[in-house]
Amino acid sequence: MEQQTPWTAKLTAKIRRESFVLLVAVAIAFIAATAGMNGWGVLGLLAIMLLAIMCSSEPRKQITPAPPVPEVDEPARSLLPEVSATLSALDIPVMVLAGDASVLFQNRAAEKAFGEVVIGAHISARLRSPSILDMVRETIVTNAPNQIEHSERLPSERVYIVRSSPVELGAINGVVGGSGERLFVLSFRDISEVRRIDRMRSDFVANASHELRTPLASLRGFIETIQGPAKSDLKAQERFLGIMFDQTTRMSRLVDDLLSLSRLELKSHIAPDEKVDLVPLLGHVRDALLPLANDVGVDIRLHLPEGRAEVLGDRDELVQVFENLIENACKYGQEGKVVEVFLNNGPGGPVEVTVVDKGPGIPAEHVPRLTERFYRVNIEDSRSKKGTGLGLAIVKHILTRHRARLIVKSEVGKGTSFTVRF
Image (cartoon, rainbow, N blue to C red):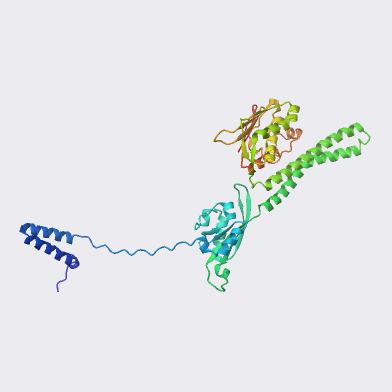
């Protein structure tokens, strides 16, 4: 039997598949001929129909629809209702993760601390710490709990003990040996206050011992002198007692500033939520500093807008900020004889308070370090004017709590400006 060529086999298969259509085409041609159509026209019509049939494309294969992708369970269906309700009531941040480290649930404390996470997203979409991600990965692989210490720098410094541990839903349901779905709980225990207290203690000891050494040595020397050579010299005793009183007053101010700084650090992460009008507040600060300004021969001039200038803040702390800035301007810029205070509250812009003096100015290399504890541009000048070296550090901590900025501009020989921008 003669073997068909591939083209002949394909044509034969085509004729078999389209046999019914070919018969219909022949029938149409016969009807046309019977109706009196020209023979050549009938042949042409038949040829066109046959050609169209033979050149038609292969029939499309029926596409079987893909099975539907199973929907991701909602958190309430992924966890037992009582488990999610319990986690929601906790006041510490908690997240529940699946075996691929995707977030199945987070409680309100976690949303407040780290922001809302899209359910089903990988944990790295919110937490970028390599140490946390490595710990979660190790817990998933080993099915054993782990914990690390983690620090957050913004918006304020926070320290957490982060713990990841596996949970068996079968065990929660009371099924012994059941093969429940494996989930993982990621919890964050805030130990910021403990770390701050530890640091506060060590800083207090270091700073206080450094700053108190000189006045204590002076007191001891004067006491020994009064007890010895000046035992019968009333005039010398009176002079020495006056110096001793000044030294003890300085130590008292220093201790008060250190305690104030420590209290501010303890609550630096809590932003105040009360409205404070800066217009009367600045007037109160100016009135309180008038005796000092008169003593050093400085005129304090306020430039205040009409109406109110409200910001979110703690009134007592803001009074402390502007008293410190204006007092420094009076003491260290007294050569200029004028301290000007500008309050700007333009529409659509931030509220700003700028304290400007006409004093000698501050060299550029000192400006970035002004808010460091105990940093002084001129140590002798600062001590002679009863400064503790902590004033601007206190200002910085208060403004950090108020989510405000301190901008310092100074030019030697022309004066200095301190701007508080809310």
